[in-house]
Image 1 (cartoon, rainbow, N blue to C red):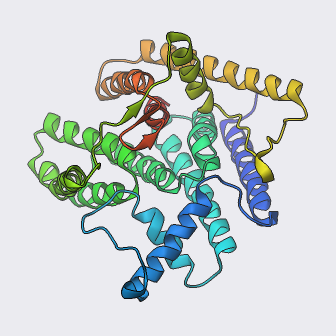
Image 2: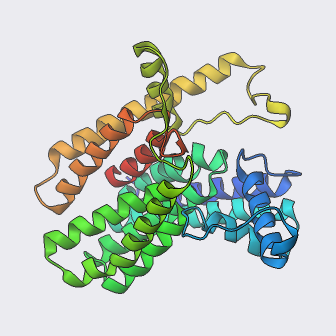
Image 3: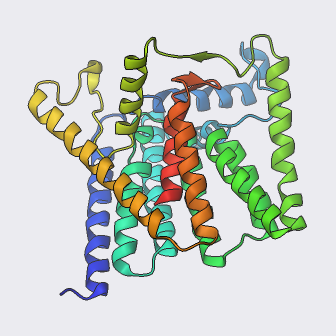
Amino acid sequence: MDHPTTLDQRMSGLLLGGGLLLLGLVLSLPAIYLVDLPAWVYQGALFRAEVATASATPWSLQGHPVPNTLSTLAPALLLSVTGPVWTGKLLAIGLLAAGFGAAWALANAASSSPAETGARAAILIACAVVSSSFWNGYVGYQVGVVLAMGLGALWLRRERLSAPLVLVGSVVLFFAHAIPFAVVALAMGVDALRRRDLRQLVALIPASALTAWYVLARLMQPGGGFIEAETPGGLLRWVAYKVYTVLKVGPFHHPDGVGGIGTLEALPGLYWLCVIASGLFIAALVAGLALGTHRMPSGSRRRTTWAAWALAGVALLLPPFALNVVNPGERFLVMAGIGLV
């Protein structure tokens, strides 16, 4: 039987090898075909133009704080030292490297053995780092996921977050993406109330003020409400969409190539085999998480686990478009999965 250290080294090697393969893919492509990533690079260019010569552009910066700000500032800074293609590549490489590191740190903090660390890290990387959101180029959301996992690792290591870390972490998360911020800030607030930690509650005030400012500013804009939502017609279409949403959390993704042609479009048998394998992976993962929840002793981790299950249930009830976000249920489902794993 392998020694635990050997198992840990093997899993580390496998994950590192997979990461290097992805790195090689990103570096070898003539451009990055992650759906929204070019748009974020363009937003960075617009921001640079507006800051440089505001009077010469037809745009204007918002007068209130906005989530996703980091996904505009990051490409704007990179564009000052390199071109748009390499800006996209560096963003993708940064998301992968930071995601691998945060997933391993969180898995290590949550585990009692090297084997557990490797298993948790592999699942987190497959479902939250090299995820559909990564392939779709959702830069702000992926930054939020990485920050959430990093804060989670510190939380588990220290058993509680200091007030300065709560303050900085919640504010940075706000400027990354609204959904990871909402989940983590709510967890921080509930933990502070449970501990009756006044300093931690006070540390959440700046992020809460930013949220209130943003919401009020959006509501005061013409047509800037948050309630718009679209739902597919009929029960079968709703169920099919939710099955699709759950499958997107699995490890198999089918990115489009140049011209919008699916990578495996000429090989439908292989495509469906991959879909079935990914579905079986999700089914096994859910069964394992349910069994683990049943066996958990009472305490803070069990309460957190049930809260994550509740979040997953809410995610499956959300419409395909709401809060100005496409398929918000997928984003909440990933955050719930991180908590459960």
